[in-house]
Amino acid sequence: MKIGDKVRFLSEVGGGRVAGFQGKDIVLVEDEDGFEVPMRTVDVVVVGDEDYDTRRMVEVKNEQRKPKQEPAAQTQQDIEVEPADRPVSFKAPVMERSGGDKLSAYLAFVPINLKELSDTRFETYIVNDCNYYLRYVYMTAEGTSWQVRATGEIEPNTKMFIEEFGRQQLNEIEHSCVQLLAYKRDKYYLRKPAVDALINIDPIKFYKLHTFRENQYFEQPALIYTIIENDRQFVKL
Image 1: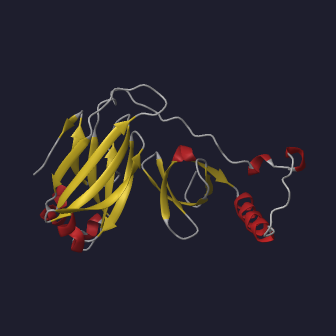
Image 2: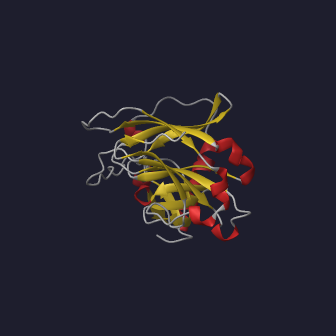
Image 3: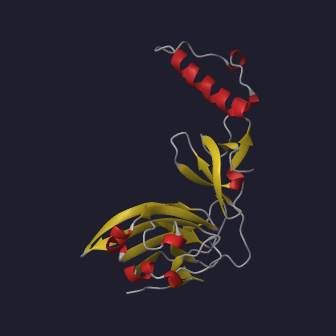
């Protein structure tokens, strides 16, 4: 798989072209609207130009030709379905790593252009460095009121892009909170307490090059705040 290849998603409908990579496990897929969607490499498959474009054309034409009133139900024998047109139901099992059953999660900020630190925008990520699924809520405070910025689920041992922001939004994220609920699927596991971590983010750090450090989660330097590490919650006030 290389940049420019056309790919199709295995776990959901859609696909696009490979625009880049994040590490060795995440591929950035550019869809037809120009948005880059991060996907695990095991959740996409390379397809030929003819296979991808022709299938989309056939689907559109079939939708246009569909009558307003559906005919009587057809028997299974009357319907011919090509194997390639059957929905993909396979999903690769989540890989667990040794020593990953203690909760570790981080809030990370990555400069888009580190060489232009005074003008660059930033990306926010939540890193899930454990064998549990994490249901998260990321919120920020204005006075005594809180506003949700993102919610979702992060698979084990992966990271989730949250948002992109500029320096004009630094004051908005100064008082942040991340809440986490940890669980596993299709197996028994040790129950973990819910996490409610308050994080005080220093806007001045976004102007200092040395605060963005080399790390194991990103190819470029990042400013990383600990939410929880080895089942120990860190609260920064």
